[in-house]
Amino acid sequence: MYQLIRFPGVLRDESTQIPSIELDLNLGERRYKEPIVRGSRYCAPGRLVPAHANNILEPALRLAGLLYVDALVPDEPRTLNGYAVLLGLLTTAIDTILKHLAARGWEYEDDAAFDDGLPAMAVMKPVLIWIGLTGPEAHWIVMADRDAGDMSSIHPYYPQGILIPHYAANETPLPQVLVPFVAVLLLPIPIAFVTSRLIKPSLGGLDRFAVCWFALGAFLHCCFESYFVWNHATLAGLQSLFAQAWKEYALSDSRYLTSDPFVVCVEALSVMIWGPISLSVTFAILSGSRLRHPLQLIICVGHLYGVALYYSTSLAERALVGTLHSRPEVLYFWVYYVGFNAPWVVVPLILLVQSLRAMSRAFQALEEKETAEAALASRKGDAATSEGKKTR
Image 1 (tube, rainbow, N blue to C red):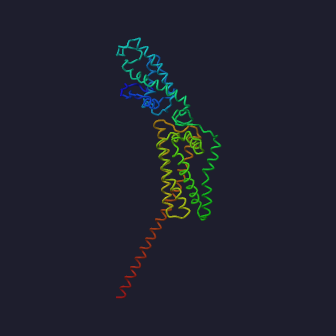
Image 2 (image 1 turned 90 degrees about the horizontal axis):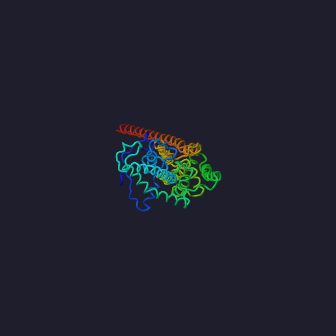
Image 3 (image 1 turned 120 degrees about the horizontal axis):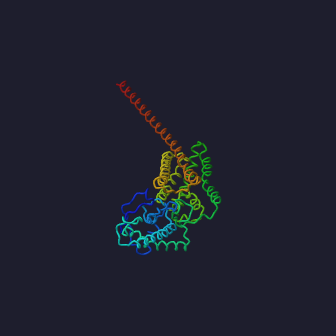
């Protein structure tokens, strides 16, 4: 590992200097170099601050900081094209520095005598070595991706430039996706409503609503979300109805197209646990089972906890490191991201309160029954004692 000497951050006066950074220079074959180059991050050109006129090192330091140090810009998206552009700019800046160093003499190690802002050449070596190693590799990758028609970093999702493997834009116009999708999505509701009227016409309004709600939840968990779990690795390139619906929703949360571990795990648990429990609660309501409210309480708490984690992880990334997974438009953030998930907060809260009250009444009735039985047993015992005394 080669120790890279301390350099200023992306914004010299506002960033924290990093004492030392290690970079593996034993890159070897392309199969080892390519992941390193593809994994590098870049900062949007608009974030670059103009260099001071009397310091020719400033542009190179800023560009180098953007290119080779993950820790300096951890919240920026990854894109190969932007990376290649910055490499070109840095190459030009380095050429200027080399010419200047050659003019003043390479043997000087004390940069205090110079007013051009350049440090000793020993300090510049790590940057020059890194550019020499990775520059050609970045160029090769860009050319190969263009020849292969790789569009993985060209898409409408946030953060901009994030790599989405296999990405292909939806081929069907949005209305032609939404109409059949919504029709399929809502199909369990009328089926559950009619079934509840036939099997148990005496159900109250809230209980009938619960039947429809849990039937819808069972369909979403077992069908729609299971499609995501099964196809998450290639979802971005698929053109089925469910895939195009997921890609439309992903405009509000791109984690669904990048196989984000948290999202995949949460959805997998929903498929394996919440789907079957939703179906069980539906049948429990229709059959009058005593398990209805314990199961309903469990799934309501599970939904509330899942939504809390889903919201908090994304919003925490936004607040702490500035990573936006949702497009900023009102439709995508407030309607898709907030609005589409809000029912899984409101409805479970209502049904949770219903279950708590039902279970509280059941326990109260049980306590009253036990108290009454104890009192009856006590009276019978007193009566038996009195009879025994009379007999004697």
